[in-house]
Image 1 (tube, one colour):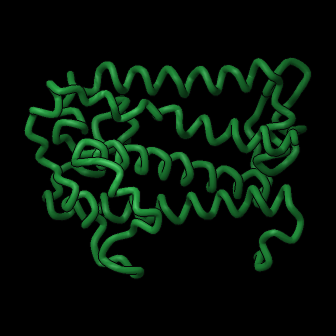
Image 2 (image 1 turned 90 degrees about the horizontal axis):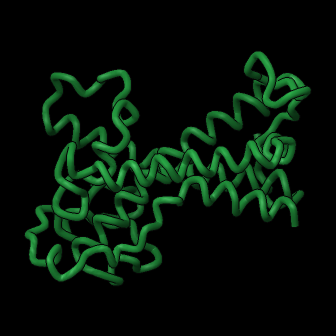
Image 3 (image 1 turned 180 degrees about the horizontal axis):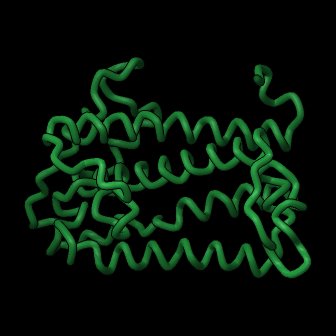
Length: 216
């Protein structure tokens, strides 16, 4: 039960962005959206499993704005999953730890390896801080997004222009053509999807023995 609660909490951190797409009122629906449903579904292209990856038929749940919201959420979840997968491997696999203390009397070096064990060892107020921080980022994103660029529900690029410095902290996109940047966004989505599957596999392998038959 505790592990189930842990998984839900971890999922909450990555899905605090679940502000219902019904934000699109009559006023916003009259605004021309430059990214259409067809454009969103066709990216990333050249998928190994077909031109469109939509096994649950979610693309039929709404129009252009709904699909823009879905894509924005997918990009966010993918980024969180990629960071989580690397962090899990670094702590559980390589045994890396931060210096200092996680809490008073609890050193990072004493925290068990693995995401679930580390989460269970984190004090309750520490977990609350993580959830609060994620929520503040989401509110900041939604409130100030349109001040930096076109909102993703009104034609902006989903996943871009969120918290300043987090989209491209090393300025790797400088000087690149739009074609190159579009390919990079496709690659990010694909890697994010794999990371979401990967982190889910790590979680279930750690809490349900034998649930993942093939492990390295």
